[in-house]
Amino acid sequence: MTIYSLYIFDRHCDCVYYQDWHRTKPTRAPSSQNYKPGVHRIPMITNNINSEETFNKESIFSKSLGSQNENKDHNSLISNNSISNDKDKKLNSLPKGLPFDEESKLVYGVILSLKNMVKKLSGKDEAFTSYSTSSYKLHLFDTPTNYRFVLLSDPSSDSLRFILRQLYVGPFLEYVIRNPLVKIDNRIEGIDNDLFRLAVDKHMKGLSMFN
Amino acid sequence: MTIHGLWVISKAGGLVFSRSYSDVLPPQPVNTILTLAGILHGIHAITAKLTPTPIPGVPVSGLESFEAEGWGGKVFLTPTGTKFVVLHSLPQAGLDELLRRIYEIYSDAVMKNPFHTPEMPINSSLFESKLQTLMSSVNA
Amino acid sequence: MSQSIGYSTTPPTSSSRFSLQSITSSSSSSNTTTNTPNPPSLYSTTNQNPSSNRRESARSNIIPSGQGNSSLQQQIFGSNNNLIIQQQQQQQQYVNILDRPLNKSKNSEIALSSWAFMFSEIISYSQSRVDSVTDLEKRLSSLGYQVGQRILSLILLRNTQTLNLKDPKREYRLIPILQFIHTQIYKFIFGKSADGLEKSSESEDEYMLISNESPLTQFISVPKDMSDLSCEAFTAGLVESVLDGLDLPARVTAHWVGDQYPDTPQRTVILIKLDGKVMDREEVLGK
Image (cartoon, rainbow over all chains, first blue to last red):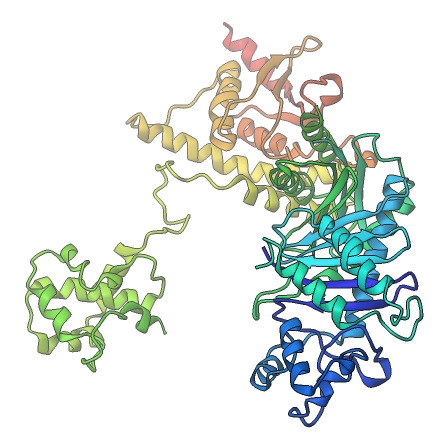
């Protein structure tokens, strides 16, 4: 059992949070004009790979947390995609995926289409809960406030919606809704912050099906 | 397990056959199913693109099944690109076997029928009657 | 490529394709078949490449003849063509259908699917060249007629050979001939006899061969606008030619009657309407 990635969409259909684990085809950073802060921590592609700054500027909150060194540790702990240079080079050599903005749009598009299809077919206002291919399974959890939590796991897993629910009632309420610094419901920025990212990471890694 | 319906989608994404086998899901006009089949065809392509861990050299596969509350759908893709979509109740068991049987019936009654034009709507009484027998044995 | 597969187990020390070691070890054995273990992949039957097969066969033949190693390669690559060709023919597992012995019927079945696909193409092809359902049936019937002619000769020949008769045995009365078709001919073509042979209650000269589900047309569903078409016209033509071959001229047609029999929706009747001269002859011959 493996967990691949987590997306959170708000009611404006925008992706406001993204985190991944165990992906062999990482998503690319979006081009700078499509860049939306506070969503993900995918390293920007720059000419100078050694520049540590590029990894950090994605989070507005991480800067407030101590020195650069601490930051580095922090990031390596919570994001598999960033930091160490040789790892970064290895990632560069792997087949590159879609830019993040396009990928998240595809995810949302699939969810929306399937949702509409299921709604039409059943004639009731019910959403689909998951779909799977031979290589992954996507779980969907809708909150009453129209946030959509999307989790990609390996195809053999059972329904993981309860995890999404746990994330919603736990870290999300705690570190996003109750965090006055998070600009909820604005369309410019995501909801990323260190505490939330850490809490999500901890929650996921604590699951028996994480690896 | 109850089978609610079956669609057959050609490799170009057109609906060539659809039947309902239970009244759990409300009946749909053919045009609606035609649209939905087209949408499903598109979703199938996109979901393959979203694979988080593709193995180099191995083609990625698209949507295989989806689940809603109490019912779901399973997509079976033949090597030639025809898709069979079965709408069924949850929990399901033996669906893979059923889809293989449907594929068998399809290759017998449709592909071996000289009056069938490939990629065109299926108009075979033999196909329908054989499916009906199969479905009533499952739904019973 | 194929050579490297066929001789992959030879030690790399040898520069020639045939390692000295394997040659000496196999030539010491008297029987060719004992060569197989060393090297094992050499005699795998799955190797389809004709050139490597030829070399193997040549080699296995040469070794027991006790010739020296020095002439071995010369023989293999040299002039021993006749030997090679003979061996190759013996080794061939799959004999061309035309080269098979006529009286051997074992393992000569073909897959139903391949037949079904071919018959389907035959019908599509014929359909594009006719204007009406009647013409299509005629065309299928004439195809069946050609098949029937050959099958009749073949069956008579085989029967003669299996029964060790000097001359072919041949029925000449109507009823035995119809029974011959019902059982032997049907069994030969379809693997089972027809489901029924009936005499028409309406007229003296009409007989019916009934099949509930013909293997030939079991996958075919005729569209509604051609509902009077029966693809069993092929079988009808076949039966007609067999009757003709036995000097029973008749008009044979196929009719789908499945709508009257809900249990067997594919039931088809091959209707045989015999020529007047046949009936006259039967009357003369008497009981």
